[in-house]
Image (cartoon, rainbow, N blue to C red; front, side, top):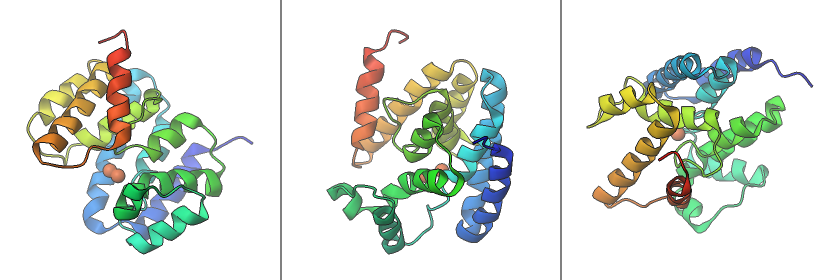
Length: 195
Ligand SMILES: [Fe+2]
Ligand SMILES: [Fe+2]
């Protein structure tokens, strides 16, 4: 089946109006805008990235009990960590939704949306671009964000390493839990040849 990503993007915008809180919409559209710029810079599919940007936080404002129910329905395994903090499954639920509701099978899209918070060792260019956009879109304010934005348009792989490094730094410095996928991503990146 031929997938019309622009049509899906239009449909997702309607979903956003129903499901995403007003104060989060500027972030979602910031991610969309940043994704478009990255798509141009790295010759990636603008349409696929638009779908990823619009879908990534679709269930971020969904109440925990409902998120857990959706995860169950989609056969997503609820680890102990997810059971304690159901908000962490919003990406996985969005990814499953894209597959079931719109028939999207593209693994780079599904994996990218599922693990946009943590990163994932198997990300392709689209997943990396979504992680960058999620962390660097223009409403984000934190130390180093401008420096990271510059790197984002210099080299996608280097920028991905730096954003993952920043996530780890932040978690360690603020006594926060490190997601296993972030650790696995870091270890995989450190095996790579480009760094
Ligand atoms: Fe998110
Ligand atoms: Fe986000």
